Amino acid sequence: LASRAFHPEDSVVMVGDLAIGGEEIHILAGPCAVESREQLLETARLVKGAGATILRGGAFKPRTSPYSFQGLEEEGLKLLAEAREETGLKIVTEVMDVRTLPLVAEYADILQIGARNMQNFFLLREVARVDKPVLLKRGLSATIEEWLMAAEYIMSGGNQRVILCERGIRTFETYTRNTLDLAAVPVVKYFSHLPVIVDPSHAIGKWRFVPAMARAAVAAGADGLLVEVHPNPAEALCDGPQSLTPENFAAMMADLRQTAPVV
Ligand code: PEP
Ligand code: MN
Image (cartoon, rainbow, N blue to C red):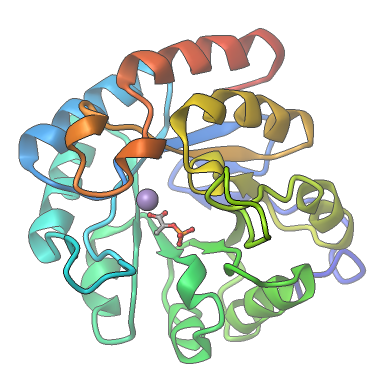
């Protein structure tokens, strides 16, 4: 179902009135995690001002250590809804398991399946039954074939609104958090009709290099970008080192607009 052989034209995934995979490039931006009302609303206003159309923020966080901040859970979802109300931005947030899916689906405009859950087939089957677009991140060590098969789980279960997200894969390199597989963009778009967006933040892990790879992702044909932005990265509870300040984010957006049809 994800294959171009089955569906020759590019698929456009509608998120309310936003068309992902159409002529325009959408920017999904916000903090790694929802931390507080002030942090989220301030970030939402600033990314909206710079041109983002979708606000990201985790309420349920898949942290490597069980001692790290795990997210505000339902309180975080409520803050995301408040930010949507105030700014008009759509909301993308991660759903980590089947148990909390009904709750997350009540609030989210896009359900994010994180890299660590790309092959959680029970979860994929369940999001297939929800009438919401799904942002399917590539697994930490997933091949393109495995990634597309994960999309197939969602689509064969009844949900055709899948957006793929390349977020870097594990390699031997250590100067970057992951290795951004930019080749995946044209390759996946050749074999599949689904929209593909790129997350340079998690791919590289260091904010300084995010704008260059955002430019490269757009040049490679990405339909959008997922970018972490925090009002005070040094104080972030999660992923501060890869988070752009609102000023750096605005500069990146202005730069992208010089050459690309960013909304
Ligand atoms: C995220 O987007 O916050 C996240 C946890 O990303 P990934 O699943 O790609 O690691
Ligand atoms: Mn993050």
